Length: 432
Image (tube, rainbow, N blue to C red; front, side):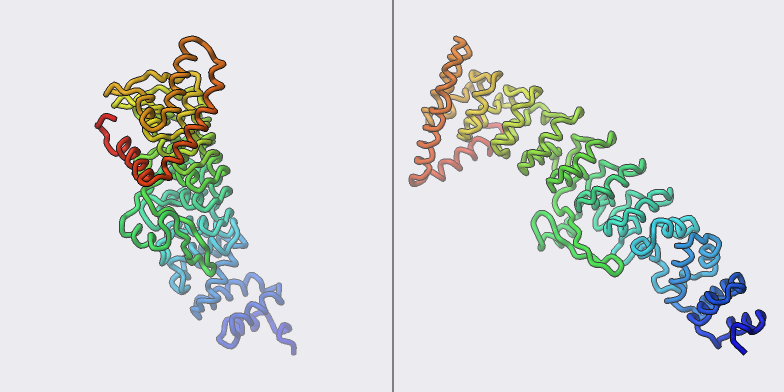
């Protein structure tokens, strides 16, 4: 007599006895459709009774993927997570294996959404690191999820992680959640920084385990940065554009070191970021009472400096507490290219004096008399309206640069150059 021809009561009795293994019971279930309801319950009971890690996990995943909420709840109530080896962190693994609906089913049935794995990552961090959009979407849809929970060090959240790794689709999903803290500034403990600094002095490529995959994840290791700083530092204009479209973003937010995204863009020679940030309606182009140009003289490339000068909101004649304008800074540092750019600006005032009574011309005269002559020409142009004299600027500048470079090639020239910069920027209160 064929096995499946046996009476249903006898088949059920055999299936729930120790005679058959779990795969055999599953095979009977697939073949004998008339016993589906009875054998399904029997199969789950046998899986729980025999306490098989392998089949308990499969059963829970299968029920979740099929959106069988009753079965998932029943399994959870029966303590299936205590049987599964990864039970305490099952969701951390599930977000990397199940579909969006599977993850959502587990969440709906009450599984803890904020468990920490052995690397102290929440399920949301795991899903973000693996770039699993469906899982991230399911996690964000559960109000119990701590969407701003940090990883590695205080305040490095899922949004920071997505920004630093260029996951634009994940960044969009996270920003769509009203609970996301878009301006969270990282606060890196020195112990963590010291640990990571041995890899790189700015950004570290860390191999971190995510379920059965190994991913290279980029994280910052210097002073605390908001997500906006991360986009600027990575020179990722697509991520930067996404962030700037969010009304909650503070475009002038400071790092723990006191640097705005615009200042960082200037320092890192990120011209695209500088343009995007200047175009933002809430950008603050000044640094307190000082001009952004003062910083730019020290750190910007010529092309970045030109971008700043194109912005009509920037006052080229704004002074610091010592009465120095950007022209004074450029002249004192003998930045010939920047001096020429400033002299060519329509609004430049070459007669401004520092608190010590020095003009920018006074600062270049000892080293670059040819360049000092250009200041005189600019004064004449301004007072007599003889714009044709502007043609004398560029040849004079080129000759000044040639002679000055020749001077630097002489013994001691390099030392004098460094000494002049130190004298200009090393003292906060001294006169030039």
